Image 1 (cartoon, rainbow, N blue to C red):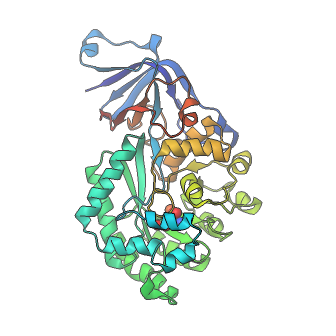
Image 2 (cartoon, rainbow, N blue to C red):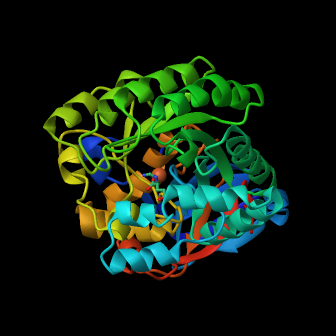
Amino acid sequence: MKILIENIKELVLVEDTQRAYVAGSEMASLSTINNAFLLIDKGKISEYGRMEELFMPTEENKRLKKVDASGKMVFPSFCDSHTHLVYAGSREIEYVDKIKGLSYEEIAKRGGGILNSAKRLHNTSETELIAQALERLEEITWLGTGAVEIKSGYGLTTEDELKMLRVIRKLKELSPLTIKSTFLGAHAVPLEFKGRQGDYVERVINEMIPLVASEELADFIDVFCDKGFFTIEDTERILMAGMKYGLRPKIHANELDYSGGIEVGVKYNALSVDHLEYTGEKQIEVLRGSETMPTVLPGAAFFLGMVHAPVRKMIDAGLPVALASDFNPGSSPSGNMQLILSMGCIQYRMTPEEAIHATTLNSAYAMGVSEEMGSIAIGKKANVFITKPIPSIEFLPYAFGSNKVDTVILNGKIL
Ligand code: NIG
Ligand code: FE
């Protein structure tokens, strides 16, 4: 059935001409329509415009499902291009240890960190992992997310990495959200390989990647290219191995240091480089003219009390920027994109217009779905949300911490 949303106070991020992403000063100008309608047909956006332009033949009018959005706004759903939301159990004890002043190394020594999640994941069944992940997906759906990327990386053995990716494949079937999966075997070096990082990299390249590819379990490949984790050389070899099977890179870069991750990402035409706390003039220059989306994860920087990525400088230098949640049990136990939107404005000094582009169209690009999502454009998937009555667009990031989403529509269906 067709859905007509009418009397929309403001229809946000309308694109008559579709773009893959928005960069630099363009990010500050957001195209909207006041007093608008939006027509949805066969799961897609089929028409939009001003209410006075709406013309419906009587016959068709009768067959419509009408939604009145007086006082409310319609946004394209958020696209969350970086998460680790398949995990077993939470790690709040580490969080308390962190508050008490323990360093990341000390926490890891007590059995915490990524390896802690790997141990838990190993001891948890696929059914239980699916159940936990579905709850998280349900939560983010009602917070306005319509597409989400999910990484492996808490397996760290061939068997458990495949298990994680199969869980993600099952989620693609079960959830109305659009889901992309990323193989992140190189997330940490497991204990059995302590002192033999090279051997683990070999395992990733020679055993894991071919199996992941043969079962078509991943859309992308990721490496944690940073100080204390994987080197530039490791990263290059892993990315090349993945690219042989058509897996485009999306990498963790420059979170802990000037790791060279940004440079290596651009060199291998990564779809995105993510985190970016350590980004200087040189890295900004490298990103300019590339097809790689700089992606910032405000939740992790907030939760770990890190320095902030120089988002203002990036945008002012003409770069696009995407924002994502990094939803994971260790450094960002939240997938709330409305909060990410607020953080983008408050902590990174993005204007609401810039932050809205960063959490929708640009993050859609960063997960390879900007041709089908991320804006209100004819032919795009009808993944949108209707807000509660709100006074202005700016209110969305301003009123941080409360849920402003009223109605969720995914694949043209009202949930
Ligand atoms: O993106 N930076 C690396 N990995 C995750 C954290 C994973 C964890 O601590 O469990 C991140 O922040
Ligand atoms: Fe991450």
